[in-house]
Every structure is written in structure tokens, then in C-alpha cells.
Image (cartoon, rainbow, N blue to C red; front, side, top):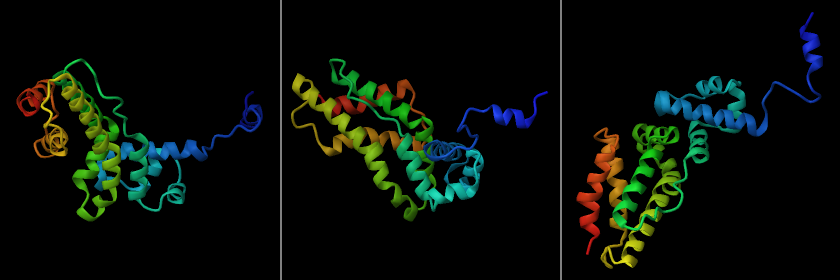
Length: 205
């Protein structure tokens, strides 16, 4: 007959059912992302995160004193990297593929979570996330756009005077505006139209 005592004694030395350290922290961060993706910033609570992580509320508060601090760490840990700038031999295809990559990041679970923060936070709270948005989203996107455009200049496809911060802002600004204000999910056709009707005419010689 198997008893609870015999099961307990059969466990390997040092085995435990309690999660600790990095394992528990990862579960809490994942639960915070899940809450943001499903109930949004306003619906997220530390209690709900604790339930999602299958831990006690005290374990969450010991590590993060506020949901702002928790969400910043959860997003920082999970935002997908955009990788290296695409290089398909022409600026139009490079921009198109980069936009598809940005769209995939926007509609990933961390992307949905970040947009929930941007859309729902008041101005004072959203200021706490500005550094994260810059370092995790805006700066990487603009860096890759800069590489694509400057490579186009080297190939003779793009005007030498075209590169500039305003040019690099166009795609992120349009994608965020259409997503936030118009609810657009940026289909393949919409991405192609933006590249062909806005970016290529803006850049070409």
C-alpha cells in the first residue's frame, strides 16, 4: 500500500515541491504578463498575479513593492529582441521584412502587455515606463531602420540626404498610431502599402 509517508520518503534527497529563487521569480513575472494580456493594466492586481503564479501574495510583495515595479521587470525580461537588420539586397524588401518583425513583436504576449500599459496608464504612471519603451522598443527599431536606410544609401537606392531621425520615426509612429487609435492589426497588405506609398517615395533618389 502506498501512503503519503512512503511517497515522501521516496523523494530524492533535497527534493521539494516549493519553488524558490529564480524559478519562483520567473513564475511571478510570467503571471504578470498573463494578467496584462488578459485583463489589462487596470485589471492587474498583485493578488491576481500571486494566484496565477500559484504562490502567496507575500512572496510577490517581498520582491516587488508595487505593480509598476513588477510590470517593468516582467516586460524587460520578456520583450522579444528584433535581431539584426534584414539584408535582402534592396531597401524595399528590407523595410518590409523589418516591419513584419516589428508587427510580430507588437502582437506577442509581451507586446500586448506593453500596449496595455501604454493605452491604460495615466500620464504620471506611464512616465515610469518611458525608459523601458525607449530601450526595449523605440531605440532598437530605429537602430535597425537606420542600418537598412544607410545600407540603401551605400547601394545607391536611397538619397544621401534622406537619413534622419524624422525618417526613422515614420514607421514606428504609423504602426503605433494605427494600432492604438484605429485598432489596425497591420496585415501583410497594409505593411506593403505603407512601404510602397510612404517609405519608398520618401527615400528614393
